Image (cartoon, rainbow, N blue to C red; front, top):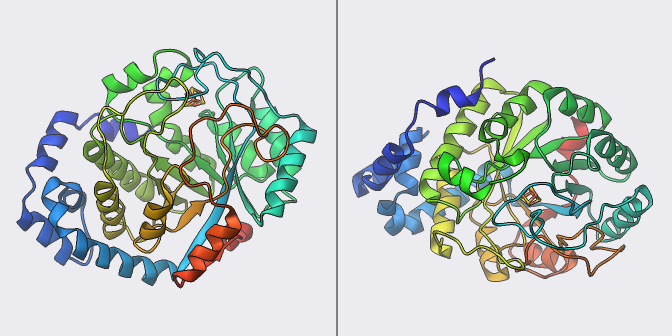
Amino acid sequence: MDSFINIFNQYSWDEVKERIYSKTAADVEAALGKQSRTLDDFMALISPAAAKYLEPMAQLSQQLTQQRFGKTIQMYVPMYLSNECNNICTYCGFSLDNKVRRRTLSATEILQEAMAIKEMGYEHVLLVTGEANHTVHVPYFKNAISLLRNHFAHISMEVQPLDEEDYRELTVEGLHTVLVYQETYHREDYKKHHPKGKKSNFQYRIETPDRLGRAGVHKIGLGILIGLEDWRTDSFFTALHLNYLERTYWQTKYSISFPRLRPFSGGLEPKIEMVDRELVQLICAWRIFNQEVELSLSTREHPRFRDNVMRLGITSISAGSKTNPGGYAVEPESLEQFEIADERTPAEMARVISSIGYEPVWKDWDGALS
Ligand code: SF4
């Protein structure tokens, strides 16, 4: 069966990296001057040569975002259902080798959490778990979705990759969106960071968006974990992936996230540090390259940074997030997956969004109508 891996295998990481780093100011200017941009233009926009074009990039990105999305910011919040995990991932607080108490929410607890989240005003919830296939499996997800679908207009999931048939079943149950981040497209480093468990299967993971597309999931979220490898090269491969998916599963919607490695108890230091200016460059490059894709930013980022980039291209954010199972009502003190940098409540965030002339959108009408 055709999948992205066939395209991916035609590229060499080192050659792509070399091409990005050899882009010139003329390449960046050419990319900025066009109406629509190719993957080669995207390379120029994420290259070191584009760093001195941040101001025109920000202006163009803002203008393109407002044309397509208006002055709106979609609000969503994660609900961690479980921190059980059979994988070892070097960057994660839930990794199997991290000796912490594990917990999976019961049906009653899921509803308790849901009520606390509803009180904050949310209509879009993102369900998150580790990868524990014996306890947190498809029947568990089906039950969670059936419990929540009458309370939320949009249900997203960020859990272990599943089979195509599983996604089909969950979509029928009420699932709208699935986020599945490749973490890194660098095969060898991927192996290094995922030494044990099902997640170490690079091919199964990279083919997950294909299974989602074939299953007819409404929206697919892609991303890399910034800090594991060279972010420019990894971002190029994400763009290559998105390009392929948009052509192949053209009825599906897409979003991109920009998680930067955050501290957790006993955690990994980023191999490559991405500074704020570089993340602004990346966000703007994405928007200039692709006007349809949703760009999302979580509470991993600091308040000042989030407030600034909301105007430049970001279209959805989380606020008031807890990254531990039961974090909103059931057991606020359980171990979190990573530290939050923006602790503001959803109400505070909504005030900030309004104060810069934007409208916070709690209900994803598009999702509700699909
Ligand atoms: S990143 Fe996901 S799969 Fe890996 S240890 Fe954390 S929860 Fe488990």
